[in-house]
View (cartoon, rainbow over the protein chains, first blue to last red):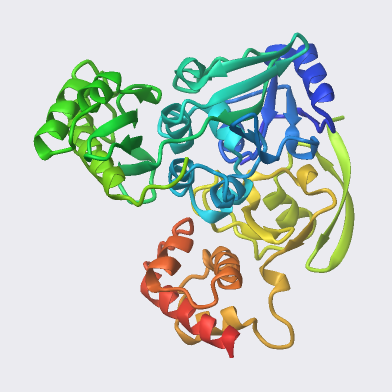
Length: 286
Length: 156
């Protein structure tokens, strides 16, 4: 297969990349690790006239703590994020599902966010952890919380003249878990749950965040399930009730992989498994 | 017109070529350098047959542009054997870990990367490391045996 013709631009700096995006707007696409965009190009589902390739752009791959948050450059490779000691365990667990090794070697954290495949794991982890996306254009930078970043399948808050610079992640709670179901173990997620929580001295849930893949055409939080579990001891009854109220308004997609009803049933089970799993993991310092 | 000159090292040999910007690295290796050991199965990053090593890490060559490999050092299946087979190739041979052989170059690259980081992997770790490579002759059992044998050969 062969992509349609395009001009390949390899800016060396963010300023050059932003200039290219300002100049070409909708006709340009940013190329990060290529593990999602390259298939779209060879299948001719994307036909940009300019590819703004960030692989030679300086300063986009750092993973460092600053001002209480972890800052991960948009071009940090998934394998490097997964293995970095500062990475929140929930994000590392989610990236473990992100594809085979050769894909994670090239695929980037920023690319996964910007592509916004509804079945992708890293966006759900980012949403669960209240990550903030740092976007840059000629107008400067703006910060978009993950909760406002993912608009629809493959649609994000990134404007045509903007690029994703960095993902900022505030400190996580001490316990987390990520569980997923697909047709085959390593295949695309049919449904998945990410959770991050804290327990008090009596074993009650004192803080909890839950994000779902497969409950909508984008990753979503389940605030009603979070509220139902807050202050409660995670018993089978409270977990089942939390899954029921948390998923009550959800409208999962129906497709060849699974019906909406099947996804809801699977998500309820995954939610219970994820929260219980998180409660039983060793607590870690935030 | 949407072309660029690239210089890269493949299996220790330097090449300079002028290529269309849209040329895939897999097509560059096969059609320009005539290194046809890199096989193209699906062409969109699912099957793993085109996996090669680029600057020390595996990548699917069908998901990279040739222009992106400018300055890179690449090892393809043609670069593995010296006078004798590479130990991983030897182990695949001994354990009948291939039937048609189409997927084999990708499996070899994935196996070499696994054993470099984990010299004594469990069966579960082997299956995890190879899950991005598809064999349609249903040869996974023998492939896992071969990887365990390759680990022994490389540790010896």
